[in-house]
Amino acid sequence: MTTLAKNLPGLAVCLAIAVPCWIVGQLFPLVGGPVFAILAGMAIAAVWKQPTRRRTQPGIAFTGKKVLQAAVVLLGFGLNLAQIAQVGLTSLPIICSTIATALVTAYVLHKLLRMPTGISTLVGVGSSICGGSAIAATAQVIKAKDEDVAQAISVIFLFNVLAALVFPSLGGALGMSNDGFGLFAGTAVNDTSSVTAAAAAWDGMHPGSNALDYATIVKLTRTLAIIPITLVLGIWMARQESRDPLASEARENSAAKPAGKLGNFSLRRALPLFIVLFLAASVITTAAASAGADPALFEPLKTLSKFFIVMAMAAIGLNTDVVHLVKSGGKPILMGFACWVAITAVSLGMQHALGLW
Image (cartoon, rainbow, N blue to C red; front, side):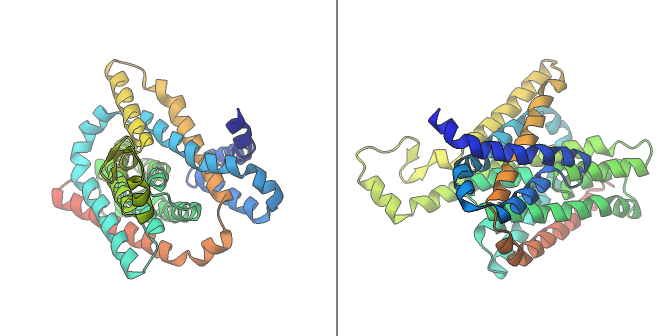
């Protein structure tokens, strides 16, 4: 009860911001509730006086961390692994190629531009996998700053909008087939809402096309890459922390070795619980579908996941310094642009090489 009382004011503030942003996001899906929530949070933070702010800070921090983790777990209820395996096998070479391309591009620019590791990782992962959801999961593993999360979400949003507006016409000019464009949208557009917008626009331009369904399944297949990516980052973080001399000294002075440890390596840190639960939710969804359950059964949980992300983005916006965000925005935008162009080129090139359009 003490913890609840401490977090309740901040939770209430995030909820109050999230509800209207969720509604506006439904009206303007190309932008989406998370972006509106971050912008609203930053605007409020710029004028919010410190004495009142101090009382709500514990709940805001709780929302930005625990509610965000809950959103990632619930995201798993939208993944039918059997369906993904059936359609995803065709798209797997292209998905792997585009993910690898984005991560390598982000790493090279991270070195060349001397960018901080946190924002570079978030932009690279957000570009390569699934936008906001991947950023949300990764941020928890690498303990990213809220400002880095806000900046990465903003960068991904910018190129999502451009992709949704440009890609249908580009696909038509290239003479792509309906399935070819669905595969292109699913591998080259980041956020699910923007994938949906691009594929729906294509279907509107080509009566009888069903690119939307194909693009959505390909996109969900990409989402599964959250698991290996966060595992690798978790192992890296655990090894970094194991080299911390203060942490090592504390372990040496401890009479008992902490549970979940192998020497100086933490299995629990390498594979966070919320990622395990995310995978478990996917398995439950797959088993239920195999047993003949109505897919609509999990729709409320999928919707709740999206709303939790909006709440968490409101919290992140409240913890973001707008002035610093603007001053440091040039390099992340350049990285996002480079990743976007590289993914687009590789997706089209791989499809052409495999004879898929």
